Image (cartoon, rainbow, N blue to C red):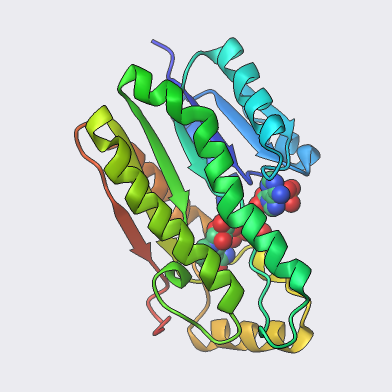
Length: 240
Ligand code: NDP
């Protein structure tokens, strides 16, 4: 029997792209969402629908999920991975950077979840995997607005799990430490970026995105009656 369809947001780079490759290798049809659709298509994965979707656009998310379900059948899992980390100090960080992170890291997660959750609840099965961060559990210098969004991801994931676990839907939180991806590149403060790079180096380097993707797949592949509620995973040398 064909494997069921999995939606992965932010699959055009980093953790999302690595997760897409692994899930595709297991035989799953995929719906991949990101703004750089060319990067999704370059992954060149079989049975994969790539859509240029900004996940802060709820109608576009709903439309893409609808299309994928028409083609592949019900969505069995969602990996809410799209996110941005714009580091800065609250005293002088451009306020639009807070807005971008709140819209993407919180509202994007909620919008994508709503697009698949009613079907999962009705069928009594499904898995929502939210990529939060160690910065969703503890604070770091220059991370205030980002940390606020990732604490929100932890909180909404736990509360969602309480809401839907009795319906047979699993909710998993993945909390990585530093991972070597494009994430830092979007921070506008050059000194903060340099300091962060130095911190990663002093920790002996960040995780490879494939390591986090393996953790996501591990949680997903548990039997339906087993929920891995949270995985916290970081480079051994990362002390904070
Ligand atoms: P990347 O920057 O490599 O990937 C981010 C992904 O999100 C890209 O595919 C990007 O695609 C997508 N994205 C950004 N904005 C939008 C949007 N508005 N709509 C749809 N997709 C969007 O970083 P990572 O792989 O590191 O990040 C993945 C997740 O992991 C994030 O939630 C991040 O917070 C989390 N994380 C990362 C850590 C790290 O150190 N790297 C540590 C802990 C957590 P596109 O630009 O094409 O839209």
